[in-house]
Image 1 (cartoon, rainbow, N blue to C red):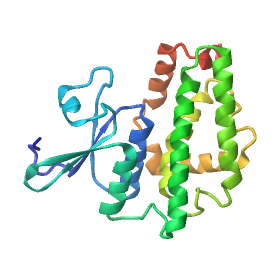
Image 2 (image 1 turned 90 degrees about the vertical axis):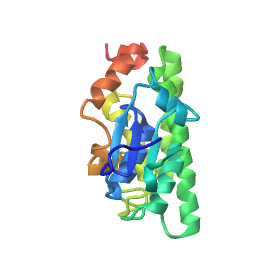
Image 3 (image 1 turned 30 degrees about the vertical axis):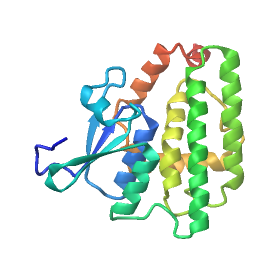
Image 4 (image 1 turned 60 degrees about the horizontal axis):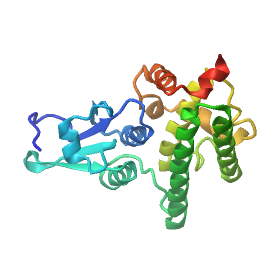
Length: 232
């Protein structure tokens, strides 16, 4: 794969408008102050060039232009974020202590498990499935409530990779809250405060396009989401 524009950014983030994993990488890039290009694709109609370089057929991909205009393609958001942390200048998003850093990586994986539950929650079409996933999400945020000891971010004043992972999760609920009260955060005041702090972060706000909420609502309608039936 070659790059025609010699002055193009060395990094291109292949994206989908709603993908939370893409948002992780976009937030990390913004926090580090790295210039990059966004290239959006339609996952329902993936272009041939995407199939050729994406082994899993998923976003994000990070295209890294190397010397000689050769381009490498990195896949999986965790790999991309670790690569950016290791290679890019700017603020460090991992803690320096190895044990604390390992703990953070554990909570990043926990965030991925929340996203799996969140998919079931937002695509539930009946009350029983919706309530089961709602309780599961509330329980997981309850676990996080018990480990939050500082503010405003997960590690206190230092914005970390954990924050980049959870900000896209909370963004879903920014939209859900305009539809119905899910009560997922009813018993987690520290999580609510963390969520509010992340919402105000410029890197978080700018990780999606201005029509994100409209796109998410349209997705819910296409899936006949029970969440919309509650509002009705």
